[in-house]
Image (cartoon, rainbow, N blue to C red):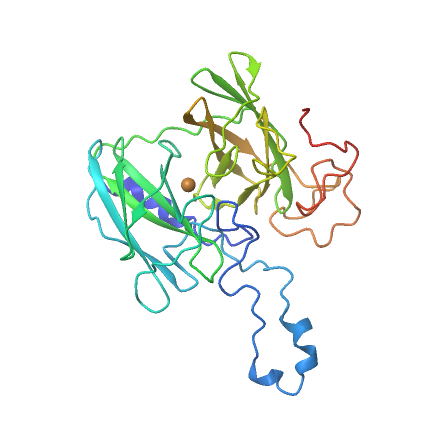
Length: 343
Ligand SMILES: [Cu+2]
């Protein structure tokens, strides 16, 4: 049964800018911004700032979710076997740099840890919230609906460290028949709801995506906050399930973010390719997930002679595209002043 499964293990190694957490802010690693005082810095005190300020993480940054251990933190599963279709009490811990389970986490989006599970063919998406009772052991009821190789992501921020996403494999034995990835589409239906995706993923650039929710053909304008936002978006790269950093633009109660129908995000994908997007939103008391396949579009300028994966440092001319500035803060001011969606 293991023959076909191996394939998934390869695609690692594509190293780029992926961030870690569900909206936890910038790509940060535990090594982030601390200005290290290196020995050869002695005598140059005044200059440390320049030397130590890493403006760009550079191409060596590994996308989130691809590793079970990263930056000194390691996921340790404690549940051996999960049987397809049977509910398991799945347990794991996060081992910290000191070798002990981490018990202090910074709350992000209302939870200390977010747990995403998906089968390797990008079906069966689940967004769960395990419970930890003080000993560093996380526990969550988990059902893997069908046989196959699954990927589980733990998205968290240890206290004092940046947000990160670690990933681990889970297997449910049996006859695994992977499903083909749906073709890219602008609209996804879930129950009586239709969600429409506007905006494009551009490799190496922060892209603005707006997902608009309608029910029975009418725009939904009373979305409910779910974990502190009107929507949560997880994006996974087809081919290796790298976990993409997406953060919402605005939040309930900030005086400018409407409860629908549009939910806006900023997402940065590191490479050209195809991604699967999962939008969790809550309406009428129920959380639903709308799923999209999205292919990247080429970056700025006409001549697409450069590798999209490389950051566009050498972009010859300023980009006239409307997809937003290079940063969330105060960008999108080109042309249409208001926020993409009408109020
Ligand atoms: Cu969550």
